[in-house]
Image (cartoon, rainbow, N blue to C red; front, side):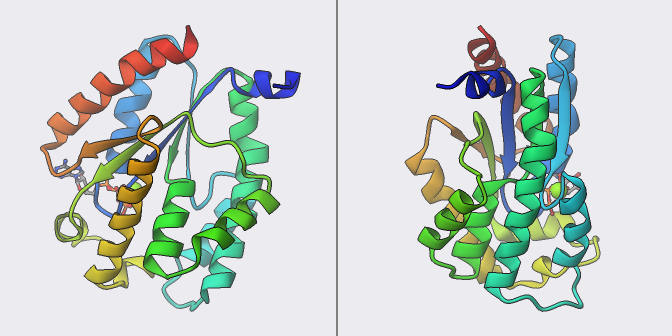
Length: 216
Ligand SMILES: Nc1ncnc2c1ncn2[C@@H]1O[C@H](COP(=O)(O)OP(=O)(O)OP(=O)(O)O)[C@@H](O)[C@H]1O
Ligand SMILES: [Mg+2]
């Protein structure tokens, strides 16, 4: 490991993943408060977005009026992710912070490959090309059925992705499941159909020993 890599690794990079309505955004303040109470500095961020370029691209990405083909969508995502990684995540980790990121690369595989059918190998190729090579230290996968996720967000105005059919979200969920099975040490499955209090209690119980281990 180079000096630069060991510096970057001082912080802890945690991502939250799962389909719409799974409960990711609701969990961020709970996780942040817990980490802060333990004395850690926390950087909260999200994708698409996070960096200045990514936040501008987010508006394009989620605009229901725009039709993007799979290639254009993927190129936008990685342009934003590169900016996010270089200008926000990496500096925060170098300062020793815990980065809590609402969606990251697992969502790209789940949505662009599972949902849209883009070959996974080409996503990996683009990730390498864009310099996105460091996986999160820990990922919480909020697993919920597309039906329950949709019921939770029914009141919210549908953005472009939420207009997709249930079959799309079933494919997205199955790629999250494949990735969890392939990397069980990094990706923890959270039963996101449970009550919100139960989900949050489980998250903190899972996080506490991992924080201790990471920073020991
Ligand atoms: N475990 C839960 N039980 C019941 N309701 C929940 C639960 N978790 C979240 N909710 C509610 O469901 C709605 C969607 O939750 P949230 O916005 O956190 O989902 P999300 O995973 O961030 O979705 P998106 O991917 O669309 O941003 C919110 O109104 C939230 O209060
Ligand atoms: Mg959200």
